[in-house]
Amino acid sequence: MTGSDPDPNPDSDSDPDRFSCDPNLPGEPSALWLAEPPEAKPDRESRRGGGGRPLTADRTVDVAVVGAGIAGLSTALELRERGKTVAVLERDHVSAGITGKSTAKVTSQHGAIYDHLRREFSRRAARQYATVQEDAIDAVERRIDEFGIDCGFERQSSYLYGDSRDKLEREADAAQDAGLPATLVTSVPPFERAQAAVRFDEQAWFHPRRYLLGIADVLREDDGARVFERTRVTAVEPGTPCQVRTKEASVTAERVVLATGFPILDRAGYFARMHPKRSYVLALRLDGDPPDGMYYRSGDNYRSVRTYRGDEEELLLVGGENHKTGQGGSTVDRYRRLLEWARERFPVESVAYRWSNQDYKPVDRVPFVGRAGAGTPNVFVATGFRGWGITNGVAAGRLLAALIDGQKPPERKLFDPLRFTPKPSAGKTVTENVDAMSELATDWLRTMLASGSLELDPGEGTVIRREGTPVACARDADGELHTTSAVCTHMYCLVEWNDGECSWDCPCHGSRFAPDGDLLEGPANEGLSNAADELERE
Image 1: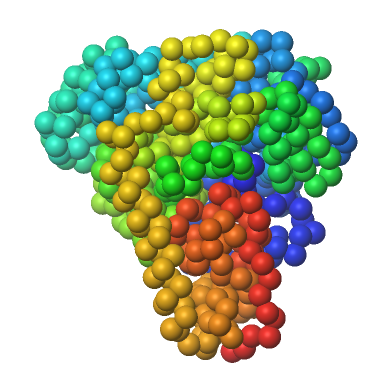
Image 2: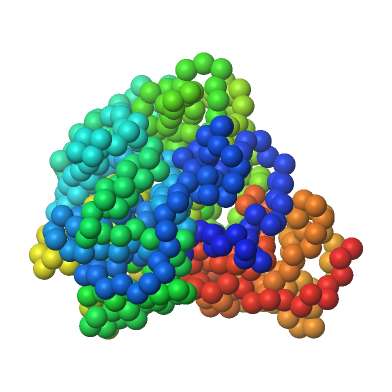
């Protein structure tokens, strides 16, 4: 999605491919869905999986959609069916962002959410949330049949399991009360002991990239829609009409939808009302058959398991080891712990792929879908999917299209970005913002007291003080030193080195940067400024 991926310009000095990162981990460092087929040539375009043209001339449309993940393309498709002309602007390529790095569970089972909604919101809110998620599953299946998209869609049962039987009993009861096909069971999962599980029937999985490429093809064949890739939005100017600026051209639109990981325009304090979470996935080859069904163990250190049935082989996708972005220590160690957990439960033969993803968690656990904020009546957002973006993204597209078309769906108040929910969110809001400010103060103090010496092995990064200025330094696998400012351009926190992805991550609000400072994902809208080149290179 726009704002979530590396700048695709191969001539950029900050091209992440220039940094040879070797964290000494097994598996190809790519999401399974985005990996090139074995016979493909190793060129940049085949890895990115697209050849869509960038925006090169000014355009005028009814609605401009920023971001070509599942939320953006679902919104664009729904708008076209309502007769609106649409332009989709994507910084990288279709599905190359958060959607293309998900585990692609098409499910209404979003962890232990329904008991929370019933207690903290209302029974009506729980039913509304459940209904839009189930409708989203059916909508995906209907689109696949309608457009003939070959994306491995398969109905499966989904299980939420754990050792707190009381908690799971409450969740099963709340889910049933919300109208969902939920049952409390005790015989799963087959690979791990657990006290109980909540089973949802008639859920699904699919290949997210193939699905989105199919939707993008449908839009490209429509004279009223355009999908522009390799087009970075630099500014959104609210108004009547709105202006969406890029480096090469602008789009004039009556309405704008920001369907990015974090909104490029923040007029509602989203940075203070949701926090970023990184998690990790391994695609494993097994010596034997992987289990049917989808599994999720909730908690501070969750685990996710599902099977992928590919054209050539079956793989088991194991996810988890989540932590707040820029905090939590070595990300290399998180991959290793995830693999150790998998080896204890499955006959792992090898690791095929490894990757990470970033999600944003609202303090009250409900996504923000609707008008972006005060003073922006014609700008809409879809964000804060909390790791469950497949059905939430489809549901967001349906809700946004209805709102833009002048309708008032009953669920709009539940997802309203300007809602006031002190009961479920007040404590979490305070905690997360205290944490952000603590990181800001602690990191600056530590850096100012640190020495300016530089001793780095290949693959390592650190922040040093040079003439009173924090400088981010990383040495690639070939021994070359890369430097940039260590000050995040969003709210001036100091970045931390991510050794698993070889990136600079902000521990306050989750902005991420390439080793040479190029912006990878927001809420920052600009890359890190250049640092002095005269550093020791020992």
